[in-house]
Image (spheres, rainbow, N blue to C red):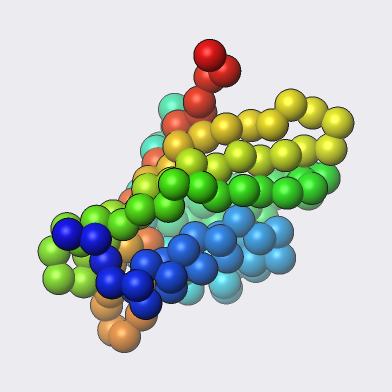
Length: 127
């Protein structure tokens, strides 16, 4: 079952926050969005935990991203207070080819807030 409109809108907003450079550079903001048990399967094939993501984002170079575009945003309720989010994202960098990826996240509602517990990014090859 799809999440209701308000939940879906909020989760899209939270996913978009995680893409913003100022949020990514703020350890506090990222810490507030990621659950303690957070795991990411990165598009590089590496696996990251919460602290590793916070550390890597602190060292992430500020790329001249001109735009990010999220499409095909969908939700699926897995259990009460647990929602799977999937979407396609295109990242446009100045002077470079767009980078396409498929994203999936699992969000859990706990202590009156949504936190992400799992994320995976998969690069999409040009066909």
